[in-house]
Image (cartoon, helix red, strand yellow):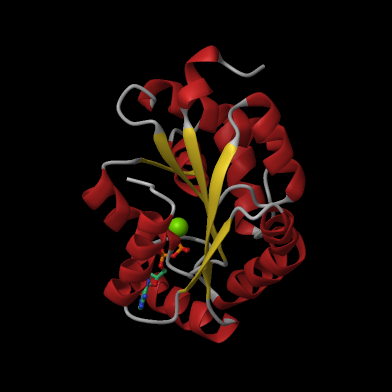
Length: 197
Ligand SMILES: Nc1ncnc2c1ncn2[C@H]1C[C@H](O)[C@@H](COP(=O)(O)OP(=O)(O)O)O1
Ligand SMILES: [Mg+2]
């Protein structure tokens, strides 16, 4: 059920393949605009860290590069949003929706989608960035086999989500192959065009 408190929420779905720079750009957006940032991956990893039975189940799924159940992700995001909505109405929802049903269920049960920020970059660049990140991230899924599986999951499941929102004129497509500051420059221009501030 949608919560009245979340009516004022302005949701920005942040999408892009693994390693496209979603987390990096969200950090820069938060620093400049003060928006709330929720990464479904971070919320899930926090659940794993907690060592709960649900966390253990989640870990097994994530190590295979598969997607976890819709109900769990939705509940984690909604709880987190309720705690933050008084701080800023804008929410960067990073790495969600991963598949179309996640988007439609989110819009029905949590809040509407204001806009989708999509970071586009080639698979080769994503792979290189992730292998580099894997040297220090400690993330179990930053290894070559899992990376390939995650890229495949992105193409088959998440690209249709982008198409769905593009058909509604809601997608801001950003070429994410430049430097971090170049990419952020484009993000700021696009936000200004849409009076996102
Ligand atoms: N524009 C850019 N140029 C070079 N490296 C970048 C970059 N944006 C991000 N990175 C680095 C930071 C990370 O080590 C890695 C993946 O970035 P990330 O923000 O964690 O991606 P995502 O959250 O989309 O998986 O690539
Ligand atoms: Mg990330």
